[in-house]
Figure 1 (cartoon, rainbow, N blue to C red):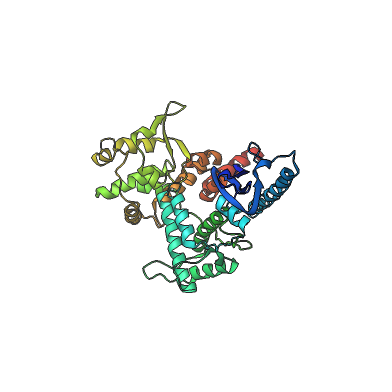
Figure 2: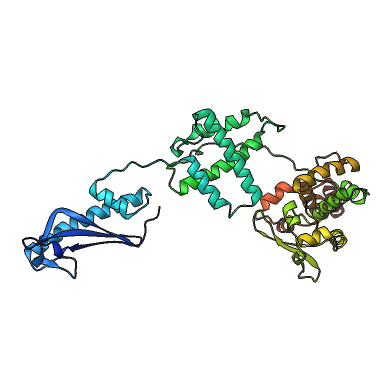
Length: 409
C-alpha cells in the first residue's frame, strides 16, 4: 500500500489545564486529511518555556531545549512506525499509527475468500462483459464446492491459499462429476477455471491481502485445439440452401453475415443502422466495438454481407428492437444451426462462433488478406490471438507454391 503524502506531526499544550505553571503536551497527527491528538503521558512542559508559534520549547532556554529533545525522540518513534508500515505494505491510518505508538496490539481479522469474491465481482461487473462475468460466477461456484469438500465450510481465509491448495483444486476439477448432462472437464476446461482463479489471486496480492503468490511454480497445462471453420463449398451449401421455416432462414442469414464480417454473435446482435457508415474509400463499412474487449472494429462490408443487410431493412422484428437483424438467444441460434448443418450435409459441430473462424480462414486469409489486416478486423489486440483462429488452407498453399514454381522457371 502506498503511503499517503499527507502526513504531518506537530505538538501543542493545553493551557486551560495549567497546574503549577505546567501544561500537558499533546502529539498531533495528520494522515490523509484526518487529524487526531494523543496525550503524551507523564510529560508536561513549563508554559514559560513553550513557544506557541513553533509548537515546541523555546530554544533560548535550557528547559526549552530539553523539551525539544524529548519531542524529537517522539518524532523519531512515530516516523519509525510510519516507515515500517510503508515497508510492510500496510495501510497507514491515524488509528494504526496511534496503536503503534501506544503499543496497542489489535487482533486483525483475516480476509476471507468470500470477501475477495465480493470485491472482485463489484469491480468486474462494470469492466467485464456479461458473458465473461458469468464464467467467473461458474468458477466461484466450483470454488465453494471445493471449500465444502476439503474444508467443510462455504468460505475460507485467504491465508490457506498455497501451492497445495492450487494443486488440490485442479485435481478436484478433473474429478468433479456433473449431475446433469455435462461432460467431465477436459484439460482446457480445468485450465480456464484456474486462469480465473489466478486473476482473482493476483487482485488479492495487489490489495496486500496475500503476502505470496500460491501459483508460484505452478504450471498451467493446456492442449492446443483446432478451431472448426467451414470450407468454401460448405459456406456455399448453406448460402444456397432453401429453407421453408422462417427461423432457419433467419439464423442462416445472420450466420452467413458473420462469415463475411467476422463478428461474434453478441456484436452482430447489437448492430444498429448507425453502425453502418461510409468508410475512407467511400464504401459502406461496419463501425462498432467488441463488447468483450471494447476494442474498435472497422470492417468494409463485402457484397454478400450488404445483400443480407438489405434483405432485413424493413423487418418489423429488427425495427422494434432498433437493430439491423431480429435478435434471438445465442442458445437458440446454436440449436438451429445444428438443424441447418444436418440439412446441408455439413458434418462439423456448427456453432455461431464457427462463422468467425470461417471469416478468418476461408474468407480472408485463404484469399490473400494479410494476417495483420484480419487481426484488425476481428478486433484483436494481439496478433497471436489471430494466429490461433486462422490457418492457411491447402488452397492457399497450392496457390503460393504455384507462384513459386513460376518464379523458379
